[in-house]
Amino acid sequence: MPVKDDLARRRHEKLIDRLESLMRAALKPEYQGYYGHLILSSDDLAEMGELKDVRRAAREAGRRLGWKATTQLVGGRLFVLDEREVPEEIEQLAGDTAAAAIDGAWQEGRRPRGI
Image 1: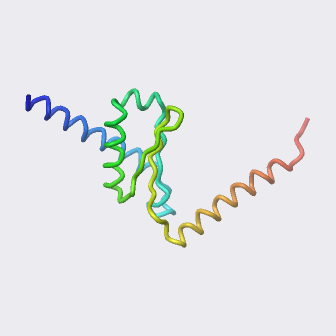
Image 2: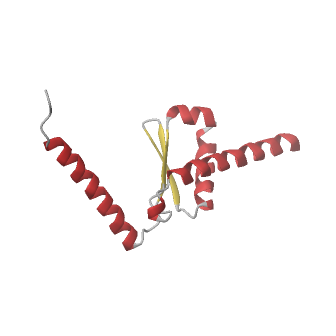
Image 3: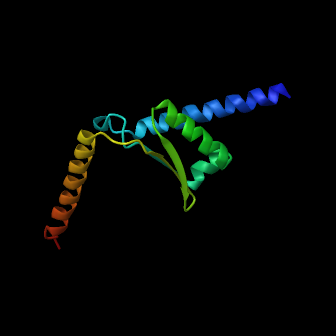
């Protein structure tokens, strides 16, 4: 029986490592580790194993990154979110970035289209 437990532990650690890598890759350096998130599709989840195990591993991966990680299943997708309070200067930077993106999209929509 200990062999099975050891195999399960190693498999779980490998899943944590994989999720941590995906979560780290999704971070924007200018936000200094805040606003972390990861969205796993139903295909991703099927590949990774049992939902309860993926959720547990995602929360552990988040802790490794210093996140206050929560998970939510919505429409077959698993959202992993960092719910820490964001420092004001990073919140302002993110707000300015979002406003610039919206303005850019709005300006693009106003340009005449060639026929």
